[in-house]
Amino acid sequence: MAAWQRRFHDAMMGSVATPLIMLDHGEGSWVWDVDGNRYLDFLAGIAVNSLGHAHPVFVEAVAAQAARMAHISNYFASEPQVQLAERLQRLSGAGEQGRAYFGNSGAEANEAAFKLARLNRHGGRTRILTLTDSFHGRTMGALALSGKPAMRQDFEPVPGGVAHIAPTLEALDQSIDASVAAVMVEPVLGEAGVRDLPDGFLRRARQLTAEHGALLIIDEIQTGAGRTGRWFGFQHEGIQPDAITVAKGIGGGVPIGSLVTFGAASRLFAPGMHGSTFGGNPLATATANAVLGEIERAGLVENAERRGAQLRERIRSLGSPLVTELRGLGLLIGVGLARPVASRLVRAAQDAGLIINAPNAQTIRIAPPLIIGDDEVDAFTERFARALDAISTGIS
Image (cartoon, rainbow, N blue to C red; front, side, top):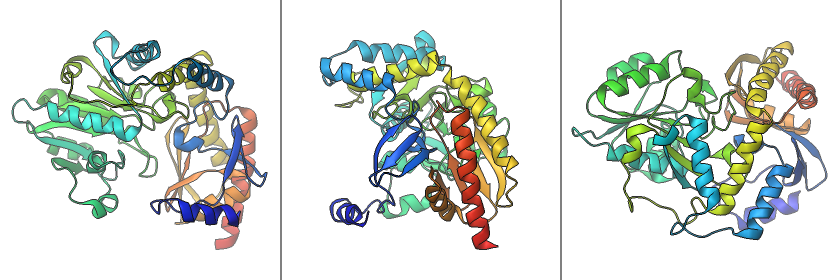
């Protein structure tokens, strides 16, 4: 292990810390490191690997499309690209008035959404509202949208015109007026520690943005593709936004992102206003079609809702004094901790053969593949209990 860590340190940019383990291969919800140790993967590449690892549908889609045509640029169209746009129209509820733009990541999808908001200028609108502690990506535009000052401070000045408001109904009422071009929110604040919005927040945001002519843009990068027990997080609230951004789980591991617009917002972009060399290429879109098709065929949206409830009950049943709160929806779960020991708990979980994540010092994030069943829930329960016991013993 020390040898590859030295190689990583000597070859990789210092923007990321040297990882603790190097993974070699995976199958289903399990991965193996280069030393042959097996881990239950309950992070899934940060909510990316919807079908787990090496799923036959995923493998076949990649191989078949790579053998046919991988890339053509956006000067040309391909059947998988159009098919995926139509699929997103249907799954999101945008319908025939909806439109899809394809990029390569969540940050790129949010950059496109930033531009969409800028196009909503009638009446002199210039302001974009996002939430404090929100996260929308690391490119300069997406960073400006993110409500995390610590992430922005080394790169100031970032693009202007963005104000970050508290995730409260009161802040919505006080902040949305005729100067606002768009409001952009995550249905669950993932990088803030899997934090839920207040009851009625999205419905109130929809009401106020409609009244004032602003766009409501929902960042579904982490919550989309069935992870919350609905195809998209906003669907829990029974509203229709003006646009959503999606990535991560729709590609199942192949890089892809999309901005999907609804209704009148679909008419804001004109040819030449935005583009991407790789965006919407046949390889990525064919794979995303296969992933979303399998999620639908296998009932994995419903499985996310059912298994999420099961996991919450299992965690509660452990009775650990370290666990103070369970947040999130479906298979995006935030475990609130009584003490700032999340990074230690992640390491203890790895020692127990379990991969989880700490978005902050007092939160564990759980985001397993959507394919998990009873066996994986049992394995998680046993390993998470061991990790909690190890930490509790160390701080008692």
